[in-house]
Length: 239
Image (cartoon, rainbow, N blue to C red; front, side, top):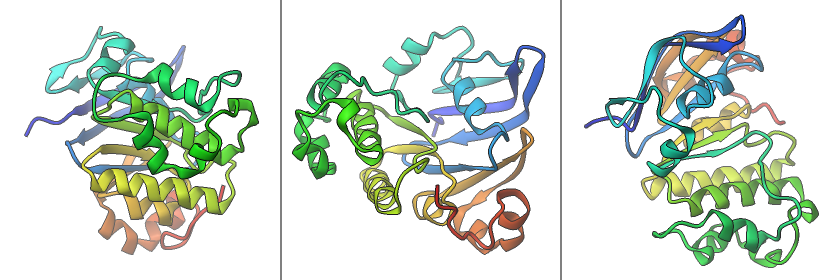
C-alpha cells in the first residue's frame, strides 16, 4: 500500500542552520506514529517540512508516492493533511462554533460529530476562543482540524501547558480517532500516554533519527527513554 506521506533521507533547517539529518519515516494509512525527543531535537521541523512550510535541503518528501517538492501548503491540506500546531492557532475573537465552521469542508466530520467527541465544547459553543481554558482550546484545535476532513492528522505538543485531566481527555480522543481509522503523527512529551496512542515510535536526537520501531518494543526499552527522552521506562513527562 502506498504511504500517505514519506520522508526519504530528509534534511532540512533554517537559514544557515541544519536541523534534520537524513530522516527516513513512512506513514501508512490507519497507523499512529509517536514522534519523540527532547525539546529542540527537530520534531516540529520535521512536521513543518512534511507539510511544506520548510523546503527539504536534501532528500525528499513523498505524498501518496509522488514527490511533493513545490506542492504548496494549501494543496497538501486539500489532499488531506491537517495540523494541530503547538500554539493551537485558534481564532481568539471567534466563538467555538465559528472556529469550527470556518474550517468545515464537505464530508463525514460535522459540527455535531466534533461536539460528540468533545462534549465540553458543546457547553462552550458560544464562547470566544480567548474565553476557553488551555484544554478547551486544544480540543477546539483538534476539532477544527477534523472539520477539514483529514486523512492524516499531525498533532504538535498536545499536552503543552495542560492540566493532566485535560491531557487525558485529548489523548483519549486521539485513541478513539485512531480506532476509527484516522492516521496520526503525534509529538508528545507525555511518553507513557503517547505510547498508548502510537503503533510506531520515531525518536529524534539533535536532528538524527536514533530509533524507529514498534511502540510495544519501545515501551520495554527503558534505556531509550532515559538516554533520549529524559524519563525512565516510558514514565509520563507531565507538561
